[in-house]
Image (cartoon, rainbow, N blue to C red; front, top):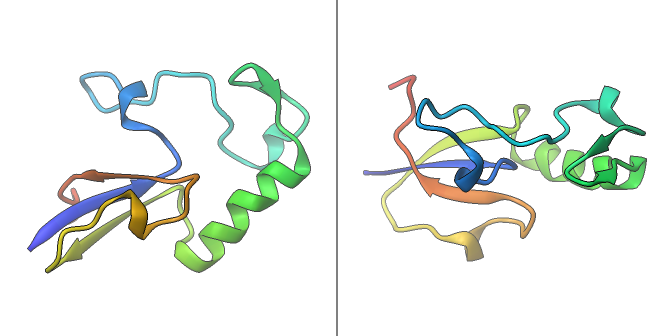
Length: 88
């Protein structure tokens, strides 16, 4: 079995403890606030929410697969990385 984490948070912005270390939005309350050098607009927030309505509730999802997955398998605004779920 192959394991992956699919997330809105790009892995290159994580520290060695796997904490996200860049200034990004995390919830609807961030609409109108500056994150990542620009103000989060309602339309941008909703475009992510639409992806997650079909994908899951959290801003990350752990999946297992018998076949190898890559970024062509998921929406372009999300990131996929090899990562075994901490819940297994």
